[in-house]
Length: 445
Image 1 (tube, one colour):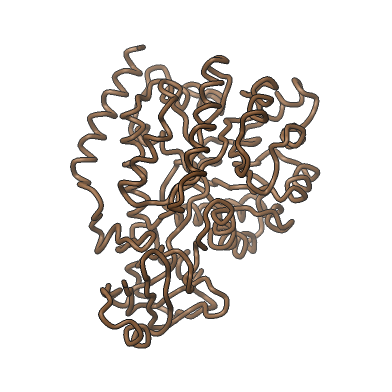
Image 2 (cartoon, rainbow, N blue to C red):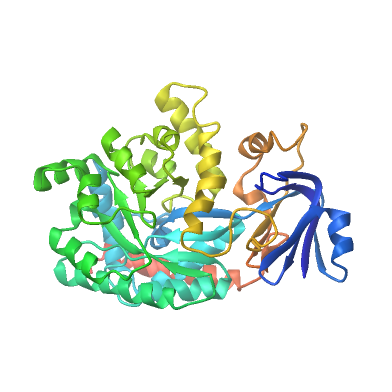
């Protein structure tokens, strides 16, 4: 038994949302009880105790769209890279990187990303992977890192025809084989989806193959209308909009996650809602790639399950929230925009998304939920209570305020020290491997 107590506690459970001096007890990998600290300690004698020291106790974060393979792009300079638009960014940077990745570099990218996730209080990661230099076995390499570090993850491989049909079919099979492996696993720590890049790099032939081979019980994880070219190409080549094309290929549905959805219209949003398809918003990436601002507020108002991700731009969900908050205010010229919608995305809808792939309730501190808990070093300078916790988080905290991270009942980080690996060695290995990747890219290999 593990107790985390002596802190202000946000539960995200509507029946008891806030405790001034709260504690959560974890038995094995599930929450046993929540309540006032002294009450919980009395009910669980002999339990290991982590003192929050007056900090903030809350559910760990969920990242609904991540790109582990982008880890080694940090500080990377590619010869001749001078993008004039989103397609140049894709081909000149991201596709160039993924064409050179080895299995070992994929594995180390996963270690780096998951370690940073742990440091930012993220314990559940939906990743969308690409490594066309080495496809087969890449998802297993990522899984190895996740299992070693004790983090929960849902993986997929990015199917695309951009490097030819042989690699396209290999990427389909990487998904199919890993999905079968994940469905047979009973740990509730690994899940899988059928990954796709985007409509404009996927032919009807490949769509048909995916329909034929995708195992039952999972959906798709695909980028949708992230750039305007994706829409223009779909209209030109298929005489229909992207969401309509996905609907015609049986891709929409409650297990499918659509990334971005910037250039979608009212009809497409209605189709997404009618099919109970999920969407994930990645504000920093959209702004950084100059792709535009999606109609995210409208999607939330329509009742579309719209979550929040980072697209590999950061691993700090609070940072993503902060950017989304100001992006939509700025875009809509409405100071009231995003106050309620983005916290709903981060704290409610991300949990709904995760709940469609993992059995244990996530994103909440209540009896029977997964033992995913974080402690933040935050001492409010103004009164804090159940009605204003989001204002405190938005304006008073960031991911690096997380001091303790627990996932599935296991302490991954305590007092800012990651306990589940030799971080210094992993970072040294990452630096060496990243240098080799950069040298390979710039040597023209």
